[in-house]
Length: 343
Image (tube, rainbow, N blue to C red; front, top):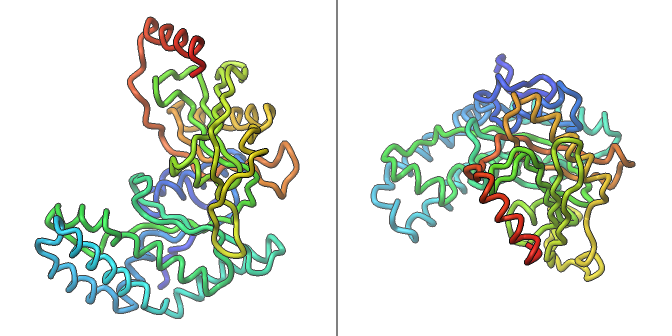
């Protein structure tokens, strides 16, 4: 186990995507330009393979996969197989030397922040971005919980969706590694996403910010209509604000998270100040410029434990998926409709 397989984020850059996944590599890249990123570390793809081999899970999983002929289109059988595979992986103890190395990094994070049993997020990270395909866990506290949640992230490579895809391809394998990014948990007053181009029109002259109170999961999941802010990229002029129909919010619990009704007074209020919107836009422009002016899809949070303007933190950056840019006539028509009907 001499080869390095755990890395502090500030040791990483774009060139390490194949080793630690795009999410971790891009977070590391952002630290190089001074972007506000929570402290954390990443387990490489090799850590996944090492765990399977050293724990004895690899042979058991391979045998189960080989017996999976015909399961790809049988949902009941697929679900049962997924549960079996995930149980095989998660039931294995973390090899002692692997556990010692992971926990040494976690303890250093606790020491640096002055917080015992620091709350962290364990986020999945693949070499190619697959939003929502693998699992992440928030507000993970303590050494035992951290090791277990890392295994659960790894086991999500065998969730029903991923397992069905690999069986349809005809070459199911346990060697489908993902990385795990361990980040300090942000006590988010509000959170959401930002696009450095309009994802619906492809307009690169605007920055779109969407957010809700609490953690960003309510925005990313699409389960609520977030507040929407439109900035002119040149000069960061706030062009438009639309109050979202916010009814639910995701907040921190003692461990993990809880989803609950949003109080009416918060539902009727914007979750961001104008200054915070412009601060997010400024950071988004910096990140986009660093990534060769490629439109970016970012996740952000307002840390309730920090003072403005230093309370904006970035949790992810990846290339944005944009609709085809509309011609000027269509954009004018869209603007007229929006003005007439308030959309």
